[in-house]
Structures are given as structure tokens and as C-alpha cells.
Image 1 (tube, rainbow, N blue to C red):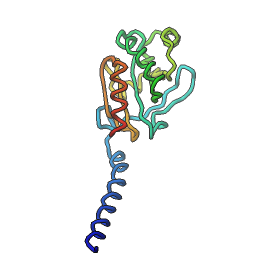
Image 2 (image 1 turned 90 degrees about the vertical axis):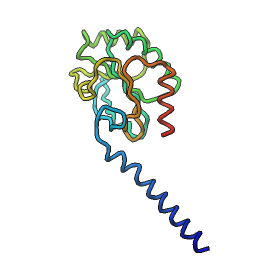
Image 3 (image 1 turned 120 degrees about the vertical axis):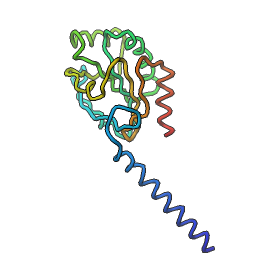
Image 4 (image 1 turned 45 degrees about the vertical axis):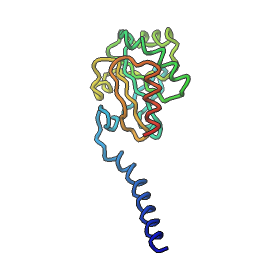
Length: 172
């Protein structure tokens, strides 16, 4: 009887330790733009003038996508990203490299033409793309609920790849 009590106490202690170590793990991770790094926080305005900040979405899985209107692979993946947004309701922060565009009006026309409804953030000064060392584009990151980068892809993603990587973060 006494042995079972010790084992139970040991199990409870171990469980409590494991529950406290996970948040501490996220806090001790270095900030960077690679898998396993804490995603650098940023604040940008949307085309509609709303301000969004990555850290506002802590506790949610986030897809960050860097793109430009003149980029053929970017244009290719946009319908799949819209479908993903409509069918799975993820947080998508779609960051347009506005400093490399002809105008913000061109970005607006692109969004209307493709009937995109997810938030499009304008990186007017290129600060966020520099922070994430973006080159070439498109680049997509999947960030988990603790703000840790779990997936990074250079090049266009298909709908199936978006779903797979997003669902993978649910399991971790």
C-alpha cells in the first residue's frame, strides 16, 4: 500500500513538472526565422488600415505568407490559400512585400481580381521581410500556439500541403 502511494506521488510530481516545463521551453527559445525558433513579432497595417500584430494571436496556430503581385508562384498559390482560409478558418497573416510593388493600388487590384478575403498586411518599408530574411518568394511559415516556427517553405504551397502542415501543429 505504501509503495503504491509513493508511485502515485512520483507520477503526480512528474506530471506537474511536465506541465510546467512546456511554457518555460517556449520562453527560452531564441528568436529567429528558422524551424524551432520563436517567430519574430511584428506589427503591420492591412490594406483596410487595420493594425495587426503577430503576438496578438498567441495561443492560436498562425500561417505567415510573404508574397508580391509580380511573383508567378505567389499568384499560383493564392487560390489554394483562399480555399484553405475558407474551409479551415486558420489565422493567416499574408504579408505583401509592398516596398517592391509599383503601388498599394496594384496590391488592392490583385486582391480583388483573385477574390481574396484573408487579411493582407503591407510591409511598406520592408522591415518585416528583412526581419525574416525573405528571399526568394513566396515563403510560408507555420507558427504554433506558443509562437514557435514549426514549418517553413520556400515556393508555392498547394492546398493539401497547407492543410497537412497546419494539422500537424495540432498534434505537437
